[in-house]
Length: 115
Length: 116
Image (tube, rainbow over all chains, first blue to last red; front, side):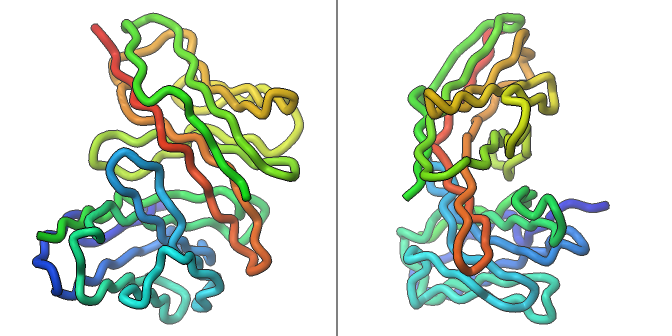
């Protein structure tokens, strides 16, 4: 049973460029979450998928952010027209459909630096 | 709204000494509580969780935590710290939403340094 994987692990981009991150959840986990973690802070919730449906979005998720989860498997998070304030660690987590659906397992994260 | 407070930003202990990391939560109902650990540049690893039942829960790597409803606390403990325990520790509470998600609200974390 492999864990949650994220790609890339690191991304450096220039302000104004678009970036896309990928998350592969643990197989058979139907719930998928994205969080953002800035320096010195705990992770903050961005968005939630149950299967392929995006059911919840945080106010932190501006119009420049979009997330998808086609076919209910992997998920992508795209940031358009990046800003320096987008520099952060982007974490993906997944949880099982069953009795322990409250328990989230995290990937290694994608660290974004916007110059 | 739910919240988590970790009063200690940074704690330094000697290897072999005992450890207690503090966590206070605010939540209207019975909370689901978690402790995660994060090594530098890495994601979060689940240490332990409390849902109900016995208020003293055991986790991985020799950690335990005690839920105290009267104090709204969920402190993490370890009797003897190892150098490999140096990391950042996050306490979190689950909030259930109408959309069916279990959003985690995290504290700001406590960074643990271990002196050999």
